[in-house]
Image (cartoon, rainbow, N blue to C red; front, top):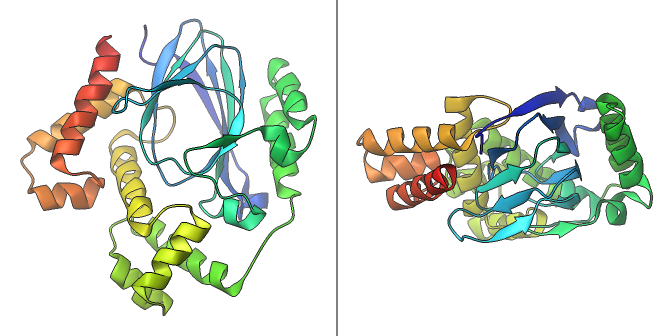
Amino acid sequence: MPILSARYQRFDTSAVADLVEHAWVVRDEAAPGREVLLPDGRGLLQVVLGGPSVRTDPLGGTREPDVSGVRGLTTRAVVRESVAGAVRLGLQLHPLAGARIGTVLTDGWIDVDALLGTGVKAAVEKLLADGSDAAAVGLATEALGALPRHGSDELDRFAGVVQAIDDAGGLVRAADLARRAGCTVTELYRWSVGHLGVPPTDYLAAVRFSTFVREAIGPGVIGPQDVVAVLQWYVRAGYPPREIERFTGLEPAELRRLAQAVGSLVDG
């Protein structure tokens, strides 16, 4: 199976920046392909046409259909195998989008229409089928942006923490974040679990890993062979274990396991 055979378009969504960071449409061309989906601390709303496409956890070995839905942030990298001609629209959600609309999810999916209302997914699918990608993104973004927002002083303070983590590429300590936010580490933990669905260490690790990979590969669709090459190069470079974990969010042994597991899918 070809590793990468896709056309990627990215769309601006600044009108709803509190909920969506950007949108994209991926159209797999004449052949099937594979890509790596990073655990970047972001949720996703996606609409998928064509199939069956499959998501595989390279470390856990689990496989599941890649279907339309809305999820919170993921905690592990997965490999997506797509069939020729598949189309996928995605809204990359702001880390706190779930908290702002009252739907905090982690590694789980809900139906698009359950969040946006009956008929929205079908309307987006029709636009994608017609090749009207910008209109499809506009419809999904408008429907999401119309949802009522939840807010509080605590959420605003935690939003500053999340921004600080993103600005630093995850290279910041929880104690320093708590000091900056004027709260205790225990409060920071409670905020993170309540508003992100995971402890701050998990979010920090996700941001570190995605930043590390993106700096090496760049934006757009990520081919598994590129991820394997980056991970193997970094492990072989001989950096101290603490530095590897600090910059990648993973311990050296975890980095090797992930490179081997993704590599086995590439070779399979």
